[in-house]
Length: 45
Image (cartoon, rainbow, N blue to C red):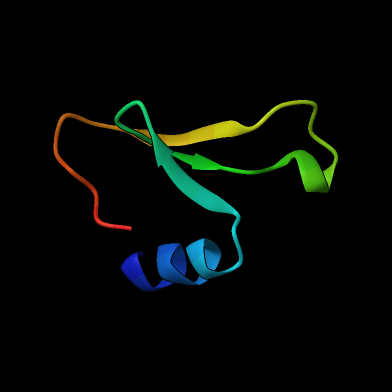
């Protein structure tokens, strides 16, 4: 999982905001960015 998140982060497709990990899905036809994970435990990306 961590390796996949790192690869997506390197491409600028994953970012952290408001304590959540977000996946930029707009380039794939979605009308808004999707939250992929929200937790009280920090996720290292």
